[in-house]
Image 1 (tube, rainbow, N blue to C red):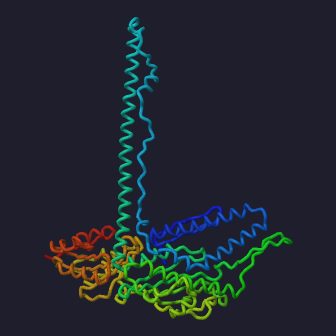
Image 2: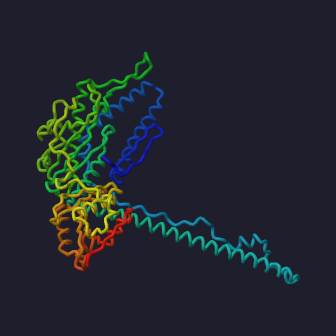
Image 3: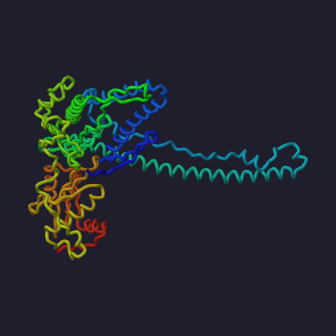
Amino acid sequence: MAYRYEKFISNSYLNVSKLVKANTIAELNMKVTNQLNIWSKKEASERNKVALQDLQKQAEVDTEDALEDINQYRNILAYTLEIDDKVNWDKLYQKDKFKQFRFEKIEPKLDTYIEKHKVPKQGFVEKIFPNLKQKRLKLEEQAKLEFDENLQKYKNDKKVAKEEYNKEKELFEAKQNEYNDGIKDFKNRFENGETQAVEDYILLVLENSIYPEAISKDFEVQYLGENEIAIIDYALPHPDSIPNIIEYKFVKTRKEIVPKEMKKKDFEEFYEDIIYQLTLRTIHEVFESVYNDKLKTVIFNGWVQGVDSSTGQDFNSCIISVQASKDEFEQINLARVNPKDCFRSLKGLSAGALKNLAPVRPILNINREDARFTESKDVLAEVNSIPNLAEMNWEDFEHLVRGLFEQIFSKDGGEVKVTQASRDGGVDAIAFDPDPIRGGKFVIQAKRYNKVVPVSAVRDLYGTMINEGAVKGILVTTSHYGRDSLEFVKDKPITLIDGANLVHLFNEIGHKVRIEVRK
């Protein structure tokens, strides 16, 4: 899976580091915070061990830590039942205040310059010696002149600093407002049930879920809006990554601490319980958090990566798959169930003991391919040799527009797919922008016209947007739009690109094109 954001973090005491990857800034911040918290707790534990001189005491402490670690895995499901899994929108908003204005320079004082120029005080002796008064006045004038110059410089410097501060503050607040507006838009699109927004919301919920360290929280989500189904592919922990130490014994004769592992059968049951709990917990968190009444079914597919000991080859197998309806799942008292029995009652699929990592066929796979999508033609590579875009083949023009927007969207990790040629006014291309704030599904239509585009074409695009569940529509033409079209799109998420703007877009990506519309 490709990620858009990444951050390198480390803990020098533990001598560990990690490259954290995510699709969104919010998801990245959550991942970084969770990992740093895990390391912080581990560092505190390690420092405590170093401080212990008594090996017997250290063994007891190690045992307590091991049992506490195992207990976290035994209570994976119970942990989430005490938490409201809905996204706290208020916490997503940026509310930081910009720093207060501070000017470090000290305002000049006249007394400083009086003292610097050694101006004597006015006294009786000046009546006897008039030249003393003249000398004092001259020194006062010099002091006053230097004071005035420095005071003016101080005021000018402060004014410049204030102006720079105001610019920084304005930029800070503009970015903050833009980010917060994005959160509001994300919230509105989610509550309206827009496909991409629901997917991104579920990803945010699952990323915000706190797990023990062996559970990496690596997953993919697809939301099928027309069926109100969420498919979750979850990377499950391999048995080798699960802790199995239940005691640390201090052996006096050897003056060392020896770990004691679970019995093989106990560990296999422990591992299975973890997987069943994780499965039920994920379904619970998704159903509880998606409050917009746009989710009726969750399908969970659990995948495990590893190395086949018999062949030495890598594998990635789905070992567990289950489908649950919201009405059915909400009747289950998760606080009292046996996770394995609950999984079976939901008619979940697994092949024998989970420790064997035997693969099963997922109930439903994630599939982002649209049957309408077809192989695109690279017309963009030849665009400079096309004498007039307004007279090129209509199908080639659609592929050309697809190529243009593919370059535009790919800068931010998006993708553009061209649909099968139909010439019936349907969708010419679909763009997917992965950003959860401003992204989503875009409908693109290309109209190679030599006359004004009728308003009916703009209305048709709007209807197509609604049918597709798209967040934005883009209509591209070689000609121009009339007043009716411009009025129609005023309050709608539609962008109209006429011939002049189309030429400009090509110029921006380094292509020189011509459009000459027949009169």
